[in-house]
Length: 121
View (tube, rainbow, N blue to C red):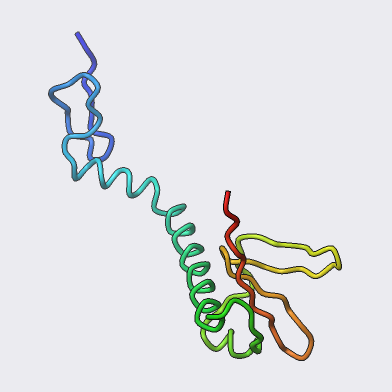
């Protein structure tokens, strides 16, 4: 006699297809949400910070290159700890990027904002 199959979420006995894992969509969604919630929340929060950083740089830099103070960026909620990439110039300057918008930390609390131009193939 085949072994009784139980819903992975609520433990109810399953009926129907032999490969069925959940008794209904609610249990399937609940199971997957619980499985992914911790890692998904971390990723979602980091993505929100990165998108906010990009939006702030876009707001302060409509022309593609400008200077602003670190204090002004921070006041808008910019988080200098989160970037998507780093670009090192031949002269040794380090630009930090959030997607296509980047910044270079200068002296006297100033920050140079730049926008990376898209290369056409």
